[in-house]
Amino acid sequence: MVNIMNAWFEAARFVADSQSVVAMRLMRIAEGGPHASTEATRMIAEKVAAFTEAQGAVLSALATGGSFQTAATRAYAPYRRAVRANRRRLGT
Image (cartoon, rainbow, N blue to C red; front, side, top):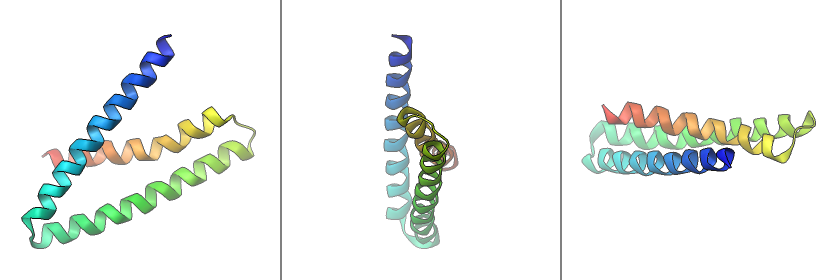
């Protein structure tokens, strides 16, 4: 039961962090100027990098005999790191 609650809280935190990052990025892009262009470029590059890392993590987990749960957990990690890093960076 505790494991389910921890997963739910982590999912809720991830959603809240993601929404705040989207809002802060939209504000930065709406301001225009050089920061907007840089943020838009960075946003795309980070998504590609996180997807590539997640894909590698899934393949590695499954190739070494890991379960689907392990693969999903490892695939989630790059996205979680990217969202939290962006929240900290944009929040200042």
